Image (cartoon, rainbow, N blue to C red; front, side):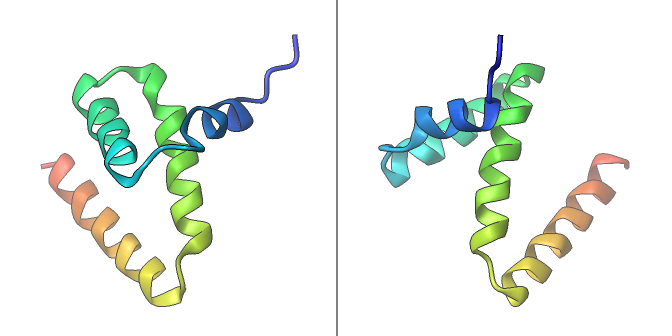
Length: 72
């Protein structure tokens, strides 16, 4: 069975509004289910590809802060 997870995830959110995309992210985070992590990764990849260098730097700074707080 050939399953392209990235394509399947994108197909599930292609026509979603901003509110629906936000709800998807919030639900995935709040559920804490491991199976949601690939979907969040695909969404992050889309964000990363659209971000300019300044936004990428901001994202990395936010990530660094989040990692530091998660480890505390």
